[in-house]
Length: 271
Image 1 (cartoon, rainbow, N blue to C red):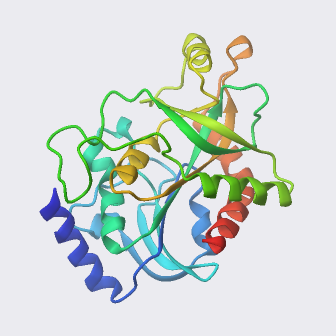
Image 2: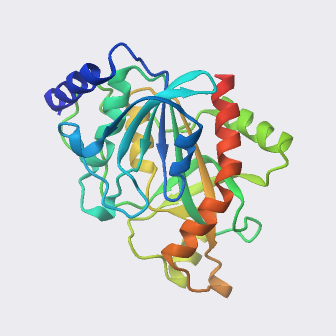
């Protein structure tokens, strides 16, 4: 993988010159408009970047954006990869390794999730402080490259505690309903059954989604501090489960996006 990353980095550096991002941002379902807040200096289509996987999901544009957000240099993925698209875990997390190679010092991840907790409602914000990984594969499976990180990385604090507290304070100041949550990663693409929602709640989950954890594992492998935030788009309460469509999920995510954007912008400015 190392030579593929080097090839990709060489191409990107030729395109963006001496622009060195401080922070990487991964934008989830319905949350791609954060790029409107970025003073764009360069943008590259995934399809034009050597070795870069291409997002196949509707509403995931597939662009790598370089620019300034609140005066800080960022690179943002407008469109992420999911396990259910058929990609390997190494392909899903390839962009994270590339962003680290470009020089990012911290990673910010967003997603859309369903609530498992009756106190967390549609339109609320989840600040992820831990996760439960139910995905059937791991991006670190196979030979370890010591240039990236150790064979057995520690995951006792996968999400940066300081940024969690800063984001909680920002949400309170903005009068945004935000909760510290445990995120459950499920493979998808189907949503969960009543029994599955009940199980996820029993094992300690607050919200559930189909992404994020692979990127977080790889970031921790590379000793890259992570902050992850979720927009709650539906309610998976097993005792009163209602059908939900992708269109509804995207609509709720879009409506709640300004809250997430404000929190992320202010949080990045504090780093």
